Length: 287
View 1: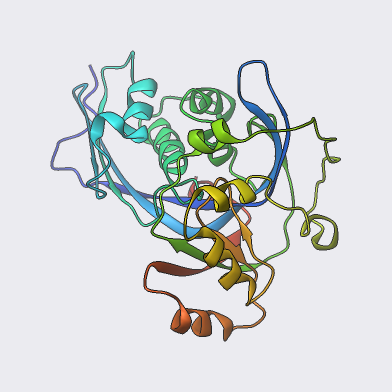
View 2 (view 1 turned 180 degrees about the horizontal axis):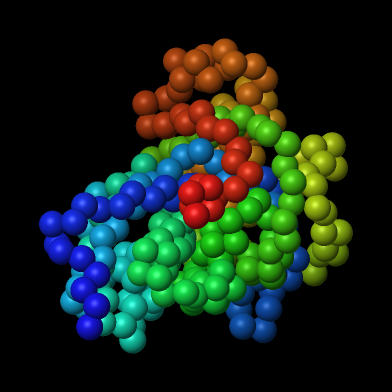
């Protein structure tokens, strides 16, 4: 049997980017209980750091810097087990969390996708992007997007992806100390009627798409104290939206000085991130 490494071997670092939903439109509820949606997914320059080394036994060890995420509940642990289920290879994984948890930024899904891609590469497993996306879909609806690796017009439950060009943009992202469960929000959401879907676009049109709202925003603001005041505060600086199921709210800054102004004025329970939109997942820039 081939020995993959000595355990003194260093870890390899990979970046797992966050994402924004530039809008979120709920179309209808499916027979399986999930909702069909339309959205535009935008990579942003806020990253978790994933450190991986391959073991020459079949043990899987995952350590997360967030103490609230236990190994058995860590989506990265589940991803490693799914990928290496029939393998004699094991992995040691360390995760440095920089993306806030439960903030609608896709951090967990991004971590899982990055782990799948990275292990496939350094173990030379030879799985195609399509196969990795299929595995990712077993872990969560957002995981295939991060493996897809490009900004995307998303449909279905977020797993039907079409490449979309988005002009280079800066974003300010406000994250309160509120953790929101995606499943809880979708369970609570009541769609009164089916909505006519938008036409799939290959490029993001600010005039046409910027004004499309997040259909879950009103529900989240109603259910979680503090979201209403945060939204009002952010809207005083520009056109602000919630991303995903919350709790992050973002806007495009008017100028370079606005970040510093917002940072100075922000309430104590809110973190502000200045990020750039990315056109591709960083994994594919080094692949």
